[in-house]
Image (cartoon, rainbow, N blue to C red; front, top):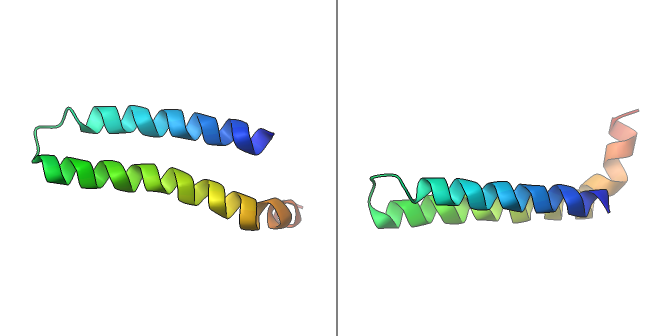
Length: 62
């Protein structure tokens, strides 16, 4: 449950960052590329947490 809450917060912040990036006075392709990379990092982060972090983080934090 806590992982889901953290993921939702991360997605909200990613969307907020993408909206901020869209305001930049830069070429549209570059803005789109950066926005996609930022959104992918939120998915990569939750995948790493669910497939590796849940089992290994309690051992690391001891």
